Length: 368
Image (cartoon, rainbow, N blue to C red; front, side):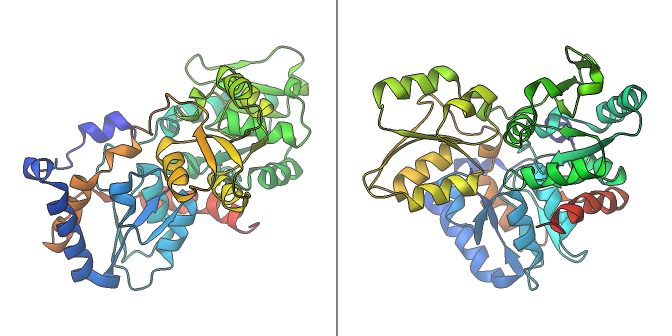
């Protein structure tokens, strides 16, 4: 389900009274429900969440880690996922049937995940099979819809994370001659390049124009990148890097691999959200860093490390807008609805889709 579909869905909207409440009252209500439900309730919170939400999280992490932790909460009956739609879907796929997953605001989608829908992917696959024959294995970033994970699982492929993308691409290329990497072209390109695959051996599939973008002999193509991107990380530019180099020549730059290839190439380090957090934690006091990732997380890292000089690589960067739809009023409404026995914003992945999507996840987890 993409953002427009969720906004048009029949899910109830938040009562106005929650939007008018003071933060202190909302905080009190959230704590009350958490105390009442105890271990029957579990709140996973993604790193990009607002401080007003993340403070109530029972676990913090990236999307897959949170889904796995949710599945391990044997006493939890309700999982209120403080993240975006595809993350809650993954949690629903991995948790038991008797556990229910909820999203405080159904408008909390992911523009990257929405850049690859099932119909587009089927059309692309048909054309690529015609062009290349049975020589391609599909991989999808976990930042994708359940339907895309299911497509990949059904065709023998697997999911990847930003932490294990290199390992999974290497595995895929032992299975087939080529890979189709969905939906983030930048993570695919950066990872393949680091593995020694030439940029000249990478093509881009444009799902809007329904064509392969490549100059040269198509027989040389090893990696087919879906033309998708993270709207946050694509906003870090070469100009941002050059400005830091000019103003702070001593400062190290660390970015997420969802950034453009040229930005990653000019940075000192690139790695997953967890890698960025750990790198700053392990950095010596007094060290200086410019971080290229989501602003809520950067601000939290700055607060957690007053002994270091830390700035955002892009000083004009905004937080992830869709992630920020999960706020304190929606969290309070979601929890109080649960406490009252009301079903609000339940995330349920179709059983057939869930089975195929889990195949893609399991193939990755088997290599973890």
